[in-house]
Image 1: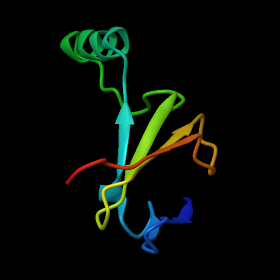
Image 2: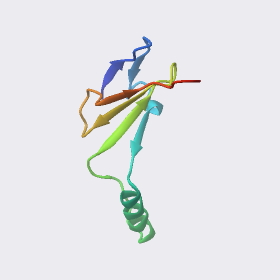
Image 3: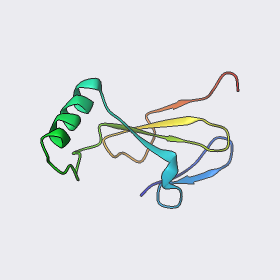
Length: 81
């Protein structure tokens, strides 16, 4: 469970605010996941998170993370809102 402070000053934590965290799947990974569930498998552990991101509810910046590293690998800010 990680915590960061957004550049806008909002404190972000995936334990206090789990709705900020999103998982990213490639099309192939998504199809594989769907195939497993269609075959009746219960997919509890999706494996290592390759990519996930947090979205700040205040300024809508997006922080990308890789392989469960607590430091963002990229930060994106909207040009226009």
